[in-house]
Structures are given as structure tokens and as C-alpha cells.
Image: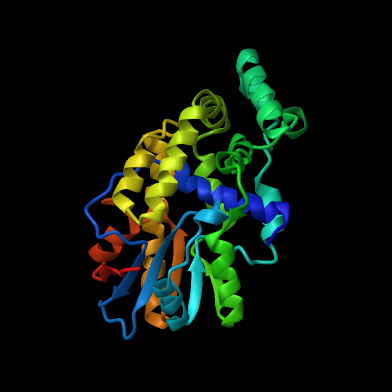
Length: 292
């Protein structure tokens, strides 16, 4: 999965982790959780990913490989192996109401963002003026890393193919863009471009700490890091994170009844009072950390 559309998709999914503030609860340090009880005949597993990470920081623990092999199928946030994915992304990434980045921003803010893209990304934002602001913001993600990149999603896809497991999605790409678009294009431009540029140095430092805490499998520390993000407001957090978590629970309930499943979603969805772990427990499941 090396083409630009799918690289963008990973960046987009990643942003639900990086740009969202959430509030955690005490948990054992782990990224891997067993889902059992509630009438299940066999357990399923939930893994929290960080969608892009430096190759030198990438780790795949033996316990994760073992539990992956024990399951029958794989679910990610979206089916990134869907042959229609490229077309679906292309349909969703452009503004269709006549707006452009230049019309959404003040002249001074537009010049500031344009210069940032030119200096930092070597890109001319004028050639991408009709792209949604969020789409442009995802293009900066690789610069937060500045290293050869590895992807947990790509790795799980490769493992699934080797073990002849089907890969499916908890939602569609249209669902993801719909959550982003509820903010409105003007607010997207102000918060995801202007504020992103203004807080760039601080954002890079926060992300470096997130990588450290992710490698330590410290979900609580990771949540604290994300609370430092200044890019989103509470309404967008509700749309991007909480509502999607709630939408996933009945799907996970049905999926786990039918087959033992390995779920791989952004780690930002796991913790907190409205996170997937807590919501699954409220639904009657036993969810416990698996030590890696």
C-alpha cells in the first residue's frame, strides 16, 4: 500500500488520534485487550494503533502476533484494502460549494499558511486551493516524524494476507469525512491550518512525547499528551471521536458473536469514559489488558 491516496488515508486516520482531546481512566499499561464474556464462545482482541511511526520506533510484540493468529478475521476503522478506496477518497477530499482556501482565510492568514507549506512541505498551496482544509492538514503529518515511516495498519494488512484472513472496516471513508465536515470549512481552515501553523513547534514536541508514551504502552500518559492539543474544540471531539466510538459498539457486539476478530483502531479511541473499552464494558463484555 504505497500509492499517495492510501498514504493520505493513513494520515487521515492518524489525525483522529493526533488532533483530538480525550479524558482517560486508570488502566493497565497495554495496547492489546481481550474481549470476552457477554455470551461469546471465543474471545476477540482490540489493539490500539498509532497510524504512522518511525521505523526505528516500530515494535510488534509476540503476544500481539499470537492473538492476531488466533482470530478468524480483521477489522480496522475502514477497509483500507477496499479496491474502491481510491475513488471514495477522491470524491470526498474536495470542497464542492465554491469555497477555496483563499476565500476561507484572511489575506494575512492565507499568506502565512501558504508560506509554511512552501517552506516546510515544498508545496504550492495555490494548486490545492479547493481541497478541504483537513485534507491539507494531514499532509503535514509526515513532517512531524521526519524519518522513514512504518504503519501498523500496513503490517496488519500484510499479516492478514499471509494468514488468508479477511479485512473489513467498522465504518466507511464517507463516515470519516462526514465527521470532519460537521465542523464546517471555515472553522476547519482556522483550526486545522492557521492554528496548526501557529503551534507547529509545540505540536512537534507533543507528538514526540506521544511516541515515547505509545512505545511504553502507557495509555494514560498518551491521553494526557493529547489533551495538550489546541487544534480541536469539544464539539468536534464529540463528532470525531465519541460519536464514532458509540457507533462502533453495536457493530462490535454483532461481529464478535459471529467470529473471533482482531480489531485494530487508533489508540485514541480506546481510553476514557466514552472510549471503546469503557463502552464495551457497559455493554456487558469483559475487557482486560493483555500483557505484551
